[in-house]
Image (tube, rainbow, N blue to C red; front, top):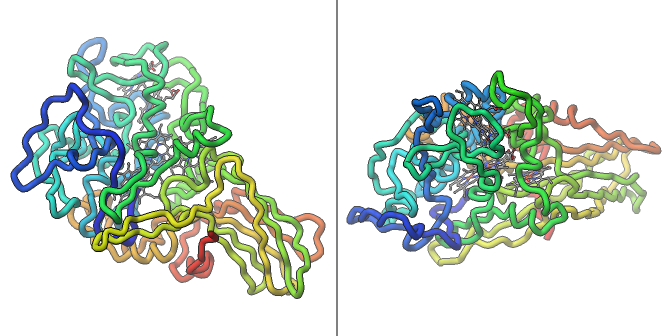
Length: 472
Ligand code: HEC
Ligand code: HEC
Ligand code: HEC
Ligand code: HEC
Ligand code: HEC
């Protein structure tokens, strides 16, 4: 989760606090408060890991580089996934650069291992403490187990797979138990499948008035017709292959996590379909009907494949539905609209409207175009992750040394974010030529090739249209 414009903030969640048998927390330094006493965040307790014993003696570390030595295919999939890029994301870097940003909190999901944290956090509880005046800064307390190189692995293998067993050494959570692995394995399929919730549905609520946490993906799935499936069913498709180099062929899960179809790098468009991506919605555009001097076009959208709302996740994600002919244009925004609140007056952030497509929902929109020039009527749908307005805002960020270390040329990347970071993807386009009996539906591969071309900011404005109001 994140905020775009507002200044200071955090979020709150029901539950959390110290586990019943956790050791008593260390006393925080005098000038800090233990935020856990005020706002428990289950996800903000960083994950503890330890080296994993090898059955033949010795042990292995928890870096993806180590796992990838044997699990080559899975490691390559992970490396190309959004999870591996969660610390190098240009938009994320820009947002972390905001003054008073609760950076520790963002990090607790984007690189959640204790070993990735320079500042030590309490096991079984929340973090050590935060300065009362600035929720953005952690009280400094060195972490002796810190492995700086792991930071770049972001959401790495160990995030989901490595836990500390009762003997204090590491163990690898596996779904199967029928393998001949050289390392210790604890079979826990439900635990592995449940790991997504920690970050993708941390709860809903406020920490400060202007900082709201509002990811509801699991709840959306549970309320929809595909409630019998889980995140892994759709986001980790199966592949028949050895799960470790040289091992027997098995039915395994691909670690691709294709999501909304807007990859983190332009180069990743070319592999999107192979990584298992498909749009959540299907679109049908009826033949335009004459209406006065113009056209009336019925556009039916159905959330067929997204088990949850489309879009889900980040509240800025939305669909833009555009109908155009000649120079005339109609458009609509399907997404969430928020009032981000005000810390000074205590006005809490709240969602004003939510026009996303619920799972299974079918909805018909009617576009009105004021004229009938001798031109095609084109209806297109874009999945927008970052609007041109907020892209401009992000470009202005000044990164500090810690952020600059996260990616080569980080400041230059942020300053020209639109050249490095895809902000939207065309997911549908239908063309009705005047008088035609059937429309042309542009193949998805063609739309992706077009989306893979970086656009200048001014072109982005013209393509998506500025100031598009959400329909209530
Ligand atoms: C509770 C876990 C959690 C915390 C805390 C968190 N995030 Fe995220 N973040 C996620 C998840 C899950 C996604 C993927 C959802 C999506 O992309 O829509 C994500 C996606 C993002 C994205 C990409 C958005 C997109 O649409 O691709 C950015 C940028 C981001 N987070 C920034 C931040 C910042 C800045 C903070 C701190 C203010 C933060 N996050 C805190 C879990 C978290
Ligand atoms: C975001 C969580 C997550 C991350 C990160 C992750 N995995 Fe997995 N992994 C899973 C889940 C969930 C399953 C279980 C799928 C199932 O039920 O078959 C799994 C299954 C596996 C399996 C068992 C074979 C299979 O495909 O079912 C292996 C081996 C594996 N992962 C290795 C890795 C390695 C190596 C990395 C890092 C390069 C990694 N995983 C990163 C969640 C993750
Ligand atoms: C020295 C090679 C090697 C390394 C290093 C290694 N693995 Fe494995 N792992 C294997 C082999 C071999 C298997 C079993 C293959 C089979 O029987 O199909 C296995 C099995 C697994 C399984 C499935 C266990 C089950 O029964 O469900 C998971 C999950 C897994 N490894 C994850 C990891 C992770 C995460 C790391 C890094 C922390 C890692 N492995 C490091 C070789 C390795
Ligand atoms: C430790 C926190 C964490 C866990 C656990 C986690 N995710 Fe994520 N996930 C994220 C973050 C953060 C992002 C976005 C990173 C970014 O945009 O830079 C993300 C991105 C994604 C995306 C890609 C969204 C897009 O449009 O690119 C999918 C799909 C996804 N996660 C599914 C899963 C599934 C399925 C699981 C469980 C097996 C899982 N995640 C576990 C934090 C997590
Ligand atoms: C029935 C299949 C299905 C299930 C189950 C499912 N997803 Fe998705 N998910 C999709 C599809 C399809 C998309 C692409 C939606 C689109 O076009 O934007 C998607 C997109 C996403 C995105 C990117 C944001 C977006 O809306 O595009 C995230 C993050 C995500 N899913 C997380 C999850 C998590 C977490 C779970 C488990 C609670 C889950 N998904 C369960 C099919 C599924």
